[in-house]
Length: 222
Image 1 (tube, rainbow, N blue to C red):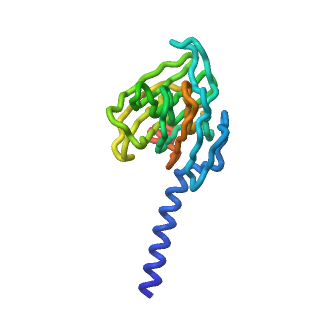
Image 2: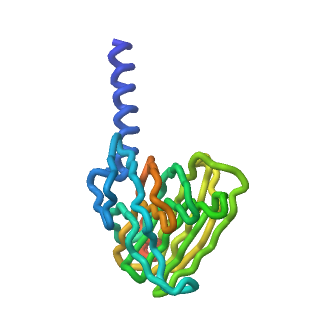
Image 3: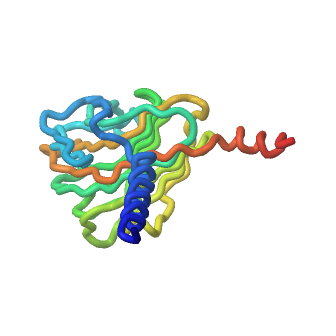
């Protein structure tokens, strides 16, 4: 009898863990490509791809050109959410990059992750609204992987990085139009190079209750 009870308890805990994970993990098999690369696979909900050479996302400013041709694997979301992913790659050439992207259209998007520049890793964010800007945080050591997390709250996107999925540091707080659907997913680009291999693991999206509605419900609780 005690063995049966223990087994039931074990199965119940396992079901709760599975339910929690399923509620947050995004099934990569159900996502869509924008600029699908020639070689990629999803195995055990891990995406591995060979980045298409000579591709990027950038609009106009500083360089004077516009490109919108790098691989982007995404799902669509409305409202507020938290998204994160673990990124590891074999970067080879200047500007090789990989991370998250949140996108409304070809003129409005935010991409954030690791970018290889001057032989060093940099935590990189590009915010584009008609024209692009670029900010970096140098990393003074080689890192085998990085976690990138973004929170969409009202009309802001908060972006964080971590090397252990425990301690997160903010990279950027940027504007994005609220109350409109977005494409959210993983991207990689190789503007100068011949491509590289990148792996995305533990890609999760967690719904966050709308802050304005939550505040209204509190005020009008009775």
